[in-house]
Length: 345
Figure 1 (cartoon, rainbow, N blue to C red):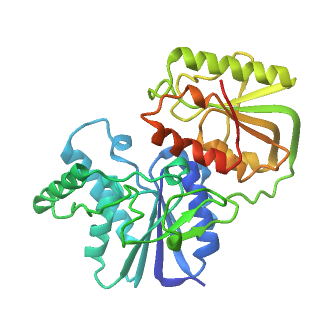
Figure 2: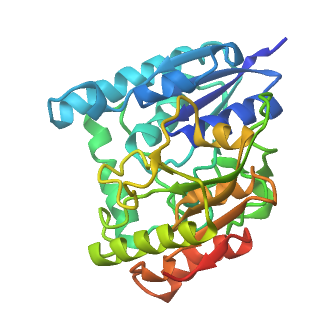
Figure 3: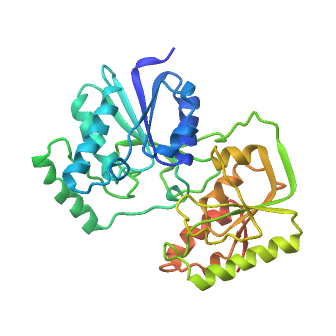
């Protein structure tokens, strides 16, 4: 029986965050009430309601209304905060789980819940979100000052008091964060005393489907976000295809990124892989001969799931435009530490 005086609140926005939340609840939350709130409608089909005491949607403002404006956004955020706060009534301990606390939708919750539930012990716990968690993103001084300035806003709208913190923008350096959950074997730059490693995110009970002559290409929008030129995208895409052709694969599948509307690395020779489950779950029982992409975090999570017989390759990362060598190394190092094969394009 769960301890009703303790509640774990999970705010998830991606399939990976959901899988991590489920793992936390299963392995570390058995003695508490576990409540999940999803911020994007497409996540509803991934959630197993039987594993949660409460499942509710708390959609981001831009997904709830086409109208724009600060007041409209605040009304939606406040409605979501009220919804989440309802699950905390009578609790002696509240643990907020999210991938970061710099976005207002998650940050406002900290002071809102602490104010509403004064007697409850409160903490934040960070759940993994791929590449966001393998490197640090320190706040600049002017950004911190901007956060303090933002709190003047809370003098008028008292429910929207920003919790100001320093250090890494995910919030991991702040004292309010007591645990940082990490994927197994994932490299990181955090305080080791706060780290708790999750077991494998997927424990598939489905029969393993061996695919010795099938390759999977992982897409991502690199030209779309200004990391790679259009000509280099074409060159790397051709290079990936030629490599797969040389390896003699009978079938090549392409998994697009959710925001990769142009499907930048797709080819008319590939079949699009459409899933009704997370990619991580799919990989747990579909053993491809090769998984290849450029610098998607899906390549790193794949390394934690697939057997050693599956080759996981990063192709063409050398064509990416990084701000400087430090930025390049912060992206490159996790792939090296996870022993992803690195091939120049």
